[in-house]
Length: 132
Image (tube, one colour):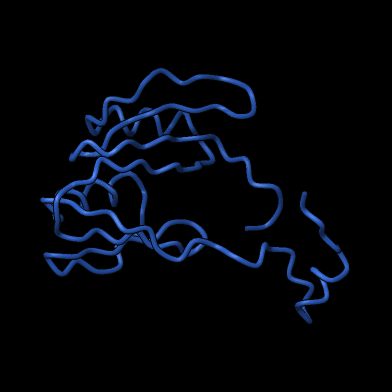
């Protein structure tokens, strides 16, 4: 069971920062064709930071970095959130990511797609609870 003291949480910052203390810094994903993967993730809306050929870094909302490294693809899954799931579904379809139909409802809308190397992307409607 989680024990939380809201006052202690709020007292940690003189600015009364309401964001959770932690975020995800980096998610590392190996791949064979870093240029193609980097372009795909940029095309779906991640911010390109650097592409050095054998490694590329793209930024997600909240400052998380997707680090693409040269290596054997690991058939990983990314669980993502977006504000406009319908627009994102259409974008993924247009890029050939083969999205499933959008499942509506409990607790949010979602679909599944694939990146160019077969990694699974689970795309959910935004369900953040407060500032992130």
